[in-house]
Length: 140
Ligand SMILES: [Zn+2]
Image (tube, rainbow, N blue to C red; front, side):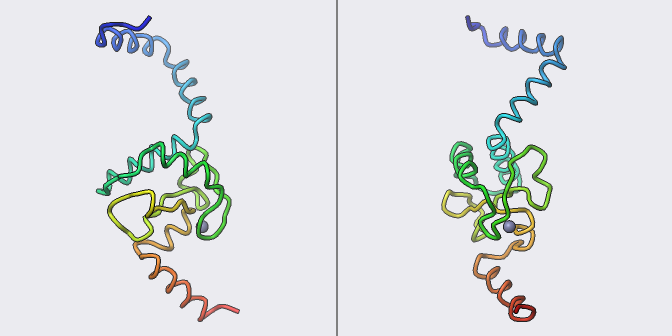
């Protein structure tokens, strides 16, 4: 039976959490393990918004894209959505393809951290030209 008084419900929840902190931490860890795409999507959109980007895509839309993305869209490295893996070189990151300050479904790609670091603030054309130059100097 839900509380009619929201403040009272909040206070009750707070008291429960104070008396059951380990139990709540464990439950949260289990939830994180069961929802890796959601955890990643929330965190990446929050950090893009924090850095001044207009986030038009919803968490739900990004979760769907993350579920469909099993490898880096640039280099094909398999991507693992595991909490805490975001800082690894093969961890998933969200790239703004044309460096637009607005994140929409159309201008993003999920790529590995290594590719995202290499691309930096280049547009796709600039990045492809950069790769081409390296290939021309060192390829074959
Ligand atoms: Zn990659």
